Image (tube, rainbow, N blue to C red):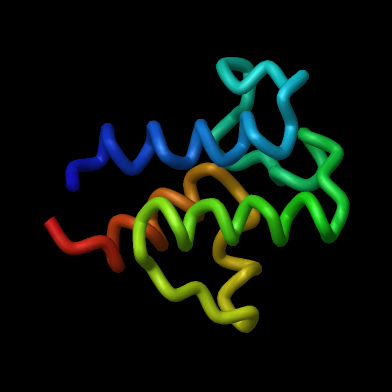
Length: 82
């Protein structure tokens, strides 16, 4: 799976939990929770979507690494096998 495919999955996951969000305006370093007004259940749904779509185990201890779009991409790129 390439970077573009991972980015598409992340965007689909965000759209699922924040359908009204303008994802094109989301800065790579912006806090997803703050910018998209995600509560803890929304964020858990986001993580669950990523897990199911990519087959990546994401322990709760790593949730902070998914706090930004850039962080999500770096975390997932390191764990998704090509």
